[in-house]
Image (cartoon, rainbow, N blue to C red; front, top):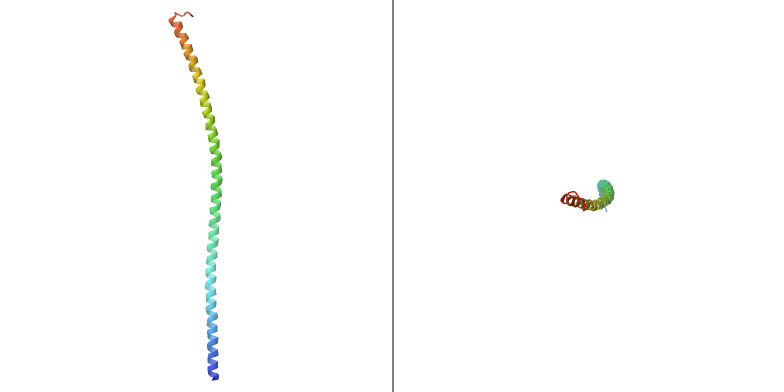
Length: 116
């Protein structure tokens, strides 16, 4: 082989190798940018997930408070219902007593104020 051809071939191989190194460096740089972008997206997603988890925890706490308040409200309603029933019974007793007194008064009036 001619020494000049060998030198040209050697130069071509070196140029192709250098070109390969440059392409690899560009590819590596591009991949690194993609990884940085992906890292940022992962961090943003993690922050959103943490915010959502905290919101869910607060909602759960509020639900528990609401449930406890509902139990108290139902208990108070039951108490008021019982008091209302008791009051109704007492009103019925008062009504019966008033009717009895009215009946006595009517009888006295009919009998000219005399008791029987």
